[in-house]
Structure formats: C-alpha cells, structure tokens
Length: 141
Image 1 (cartoon, rainbow, N blue to C red):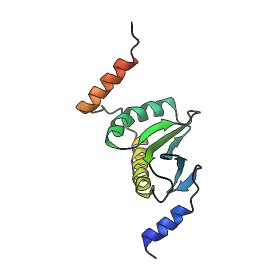
Image 2: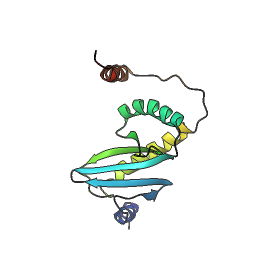
Image 3: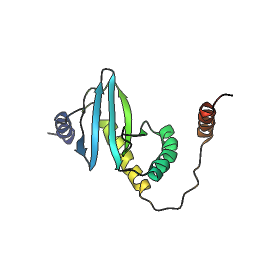
Image 4: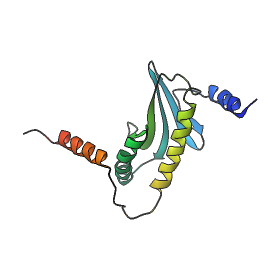
C-alpha cells in the first residue's frame, strides 16, 4: 500500500463534527449541506492582548491565505479555520488540512515570539480594505 493510500484510510476513520487530534492540534471538520468548515484550535484561554495581536496579524494573512481567525462563542479559544465548498469528508479535505496545519504551525511560532510590537506593513490593497471597513464602522450622523 502506498503512503497516500495509508493516509486516506486513516482519514476515512476520523470523526466529523467533533474534535480530533492531528499533529498536536485539536482539529475539526464540521459538515454542512454545501461544504465543510475545517479548523484547528490555535490557542486556549487566550488573553485580550493575544486576541488583539492575532487579529492585527490575521487581517494581513487573511488576504494571502484562504484561512482566517475566529474565537469560539465563549471567547476562550482562538481558531484558525477555512471554508471548503463541496467537501463532505476528511479525504476530500486532505490537501486543505495539510495546508491549514502548516499555517497553524506558523501562527503558533509567531504568537510565541517575544518581540517588541513590530510595525505592521500593509499592502495598498489592505490599506484600502482597512479604510473601507473603518468607514463602515463609523456611525452616520
């Protein structure tokens, strides 16, 4: 049996719609009629400072990657997730899973660096999006 076949067989046995441990991450594949949400728990018991730092960095990364950051409903767990249209099982999510786990590893490494607030660099596209979002958030007079 090839390595790909072994991995696919292992993926077929994973439960959907609940947390499973993959590569040291609590991971989930939540199924919906038109696709699935694939996600990993990045940090548990996150502080307001960690959330703020993650969201600042997350805006930049959301433009470059297909995954984005979110918080659980109770606000205690920082998630990295992405929408996978027309996916109905782990095998179909395999490539996205590998990519998301790699991205999660980068996030964790970046979140644990002890550096003095680096000055963010924003692309022109991101600056326009930020300005647009800021205008939407301003109350009308």
